[in-house]
Every structure is written in structure tokens, then in C-alpha cells.
Amino acid sequence: MTRDRDASRSRVCSECRSGPVGRQGAHRFRLVPGTETRWGGLIMGEGPRLTRGQLQQRAASGAAWTVLHTALSLPAAFVVNIVLARVLGPAGFGRLAYLTAVMSIATLIVSAGISSGLIQFGSKAHARGDRGRVQALLSRSQGFRVLWAAPLLTLIVVLLGEGRPALLVGAVVFGVWVPAAVGGATACLTIENRTAAGAKLAIVMNVVTQAAVLLSLYSMGTPDGVWLTRLVVSGMAPLLAIPIIAPIYRRAVLRIRAPWRLPREFWRYALPAGASGVVAGLALDRTEVILLEQLSTAQQVGMYALAFGLAGHAFAPAQSLLTPLVPAVSGLREVDGEAVGRAFLRVLRTSSTIIGAIIAVGAPVLAILVPVIYGAEYTAASNLVFVLTATAGLTVVTFPMISFVSSRLRGMSVLRLNLLALGAMGALALLTVPVLGAWGAVLAKASVGLVRFGWLLLTEKESFETPTRASLRASSPMWLGMAAAVASYLGTTLVALGPGLQALIALPVSVLTFAIGLWVSRTGLTPADAGIVSSIGPKAVRRVTTPLARCLAWAR
Image 1 (cartoon, rainbow, N blue to C red):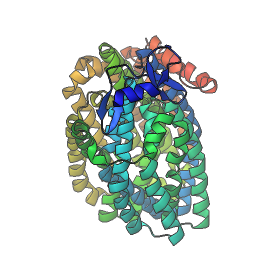
Image 2: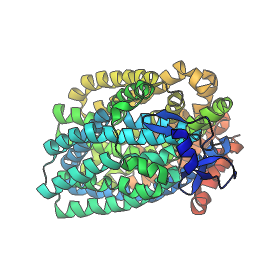
Image 3: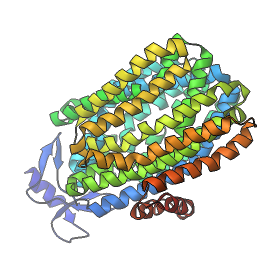
């Protein structure tokens, strides 16, 4: 009876002119007779499956807008962080990093993998046209956030925050409860493989957030005030995402349902993935500031926070290109599994070359200019910045590698990987932070990338569908970038010149050394890789990326 009633109310598909259809915004999709089932209390049906070409097009479009977002937001965030570091000083800047780290880790813990499960299962269901299943996932996940995550995060904000009562209330309402109630809207953009729309939203939110941070800094002048302001503004993003997601998903986001009716296979992936996310957060985020806060001085916390943030800014362009991969890889394995091995090599080769170039140039130049940019009180952070930036590439390159593992729904594999990395980091941190301070934190963080990269290459050949030797060769530009950075930094800092002249010398030395390394080893981008990179981004961005991509491919 249910099927007959739904079919009688359906309309003819505007594209195929036959068969009962449902509606997904402006796009209508076919409900194939005989395929409807019930799942999570909703009726399932098949819409149009996404082809490999559509997945590639959406991934490229998402990467294009994400690159534009990075190009616009990175300079703004860089300038705002300079202002924060100078106004708050090392101790205040360290306090801000401490509050941010605690809230980030707490959010991961209470989320229990719900977001990761939603994106993985939702992306696959959307790619094969199962819109009703996506609806159920969205509504049930909203219920989990409201009934479980929001109350716990509210308690944490109240315990940590030391600001004006009105601002604290605003942080609880807009920074906790609003994202809990409608947070599925931003995840929905990823599920629909519309990372381009997500990047456009991020551009708007970045402008608002940076303006609000500066306003709070000069009106209150405290790290707690800046932190609470960020919570308030960031919580508005899901509200802005609601009008731009598909109407059929919009209704699901706004309809909160009981989370305990999510199927077992969802929780079998989500809970290990959530545990892995917590472990990964502890391993990858600036968790060391919590340990430094307890075992070292406020100055050391500020120095490490500055080095960690600067390394993150250096790799933001590379990460912006890798962000659209998660839904694209999940969909690709669903619709064209034979292409996974070739896709992995291209992704690893491209990301390693870009990361190698960033290390070769960014690590020595940024380290030399630290006292010029942030002030003489941060001079001791120069060497920290160099080592952290030079080794952070190992961690960044593992992100696209893990997306290939996650696309097989191997949550336990990712959990074991992150447990191993966290164990190495924790052991090193406990041994070295009490003695070496910020240097101990840097060494501990460097171990994370090394462990993750090595373990993935040794144990996940089936996920990559690529021999280990081919993967190592594809990643070689990253190691060449590290070697070029060390040669440039040691050579230029030994010269008794000012920081400005040293940076001017380090730049061409780094570029030349890295280029020679690519030429001798015959690695780097292939012409086909360069063509793909050159096609990413709006026209203004392509004018910059096209010659850079061709330069990185010249050795081939």
C-alpha cells in the first residue's frame, strides 16, 4: 500500500519522461519500481547514479573553489594571527591555543564518529542514487548531536570560558546548540559532492570570523574573549548552509529523529572511526600545548603554538586541493573500482610534489623571517618553525592516502594506525617535554607523520591497489623538498646577514636545489598531472598555477 500510494503521487521525470520519480530540488530522480525499501523509518528509492565523469567534475570544481577560498582566506588568517601574537604576547597566544585545542578534542570525543559515518555512508548512497537513505542518515545523526553531543559540549564551554556572561551565553547557543541542531547541513554539501558550494560558504565565513576576532581583540584584549567569539561566529555556518542544500535533504536536516534507529552497519563503521578520530585528533592537533601547559612554561606554550600555526598556514594550499577527495574517492570505488590504483598514484604523486615544493621554499624562508614578522620576543621560535614545517609534510601527505583506506570502510585499520602514531607521539612527548619544552613537542609531532606514512605504505597495499615500490617513487618529491630545505637553511643562516637578506638568498637556493633534485631523479608531476592541476581554480588562480605546474613537470 505504501508503494502504491507513493507511486500515485509521483510525477514524470523531466529527463527520462517515464516512471515514477521523487524530487531532489530542481533535479528530479527516478524511483525504480520494485526497488523501494524501508530503512530507518523512511522509504528508500533509487535516483540517478553518479558516473565517474560526474565525480571527477565535481571533485575538480570543489578543488577549484577550495583553492580560491585558500587564496583569499590564507593571507587574512595569516595577518590576523600576526596581530593576535603581537597583541597577546607568547603567554596569551599560548592560552588561546590551549583553549582551542581542548575544545577541538572534546568535540571529537563526544561526536563518536557520527560525522565520519554520515559522510562515508551518505556519499556512497548519494552516488548510487539512494536519496531516501541519505535522508534517514541526516535526520538520525541530528538526533545524536542534540541528545548527546550538545549537552556535554555546553558543560565544557562553561567550565573553560572566562569572559563576559553575555558572550558565554552566545557561545553556548551559537557555538554548541545551533551546530548540533542543523550541523548536518554542512555535511550534506560533502555528501552531495558539492564541495564547491562548501568552499563558497567558507569564504563568507572566513571574512566574518576574522573581522569578529579583531573586533573582540581590541574590545576585550583577552585570549578567552577571542576564543568565545570564534565559537559564536563559527556556529553560524550550518545556518547559512541550509538554503543551498537540496530541498529533499533540507527537510531531513531540519527533522530530528531518534539516533538509536541507525543501522548496525553504520555504527560498526562510525564507532571505530570515531575512536580513530579522537586518537587522530590527539596525534595531529596541537595537543602538545596541553602537556606544555602542565609541564613547561607559558612562554614555551606560545612558542610551540606559533610554530604549529605557521606550519599549518604553509600547507593550507596543499590541503585545499586534497579536501574534495574524501567523497570523490568513496564514490569512485563505488562506480569504477578498477580506476582506484591509477587514481591513487596520481593523487600521491601530485600531493607529494606540491608538498615538496612548499617544504623546500616555505620551511627556510618562514623560519628566517619569524622575528621580522612576529617580533623579537618570538626569535626563539625560528628553529622550531623550520623543523615543524619541514616534517609536517609527512603528515599532510597521509590525508589523501587515508581517504583511500576509508573508502573501503576500514575503520579499524584507521584506528590502529592512529593509535600507533599517538603512542609514538605520547611516549616521545612525556620523555622530552619536561626536559626540552617546546622542542620536545616538535620532536613528538614529527614522529606522527613518520609513523603514519610508513605504516600506510607497509600495510595498506590492497587499499591503494599499488605496489609499495611505486608508492615510494611517487612520494619521492616530498623527500627531495626536505633535503633542499635543510641545505638552504643551513647555508643561509651561517652567513652573518640580516633576516631579510638571508630570506632573499634562501629563496632562490631552495628553488634551484629542489629543481635539480627533480631533474636528477626524473620525478615530479607528469604532463597529465600538470594539466589537471592547471585546470583547477578560477581563471585568475590558473594564471599562477599553470606555469608553476609546468615547472614542476619539466623533469618528466
